[in-house]
Length: 239
Image (cartoon, rainbow, N blue to C red):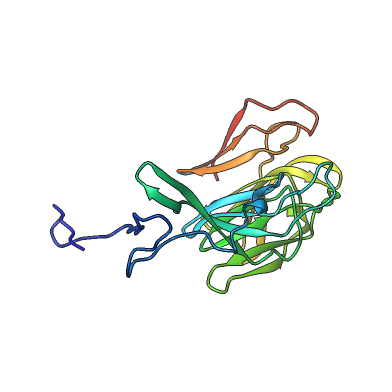
């Protein structure tokens, strides 16, 4: 491998991909990425699930597997969108490889997945009946395990918005106790401390999306309830 650079001796190799130019035949002494029996893309045939980007790939977990809603799932997987599923030629190839991860402890829907300080957190969520779960979970790639976490009752909710920002995970609105809510909290997973922040300035914050960008968090879309129309609003929150 020869690297030429105008940056002196400070060379970095960001990514190396090997693939065979022969149909389904691995190149000698090179890594060949292909589908295995653990691939099962039916795992993503769900709704009301969650996903987040991690350095290990896109993690997808939970959701409802039927309609009308009666069964939630605990399955999870990691997906690599740029991995070669099959390569026959420069004009004949397909991308996307998935690998199953261990199941979450509880089946869940209407939750968020948040990548925060080296772990994936399942924030909020409900069972198939729509009852908010009392515990969160986190996935550790080093141990390949999900672990339940007992959290303050104030952040037990589903259909909320959540994102990582600084040392905390911020949680906005959602549904709890059979009612749509607009309260918001910042949760530090390392200390398990929760602090209340300003309410979302609308009647209720239902099924919004939260994105951390720069020094602020942006709340996008959502609605006041499950029956009201979607919102065109974007709210900016600066901690």
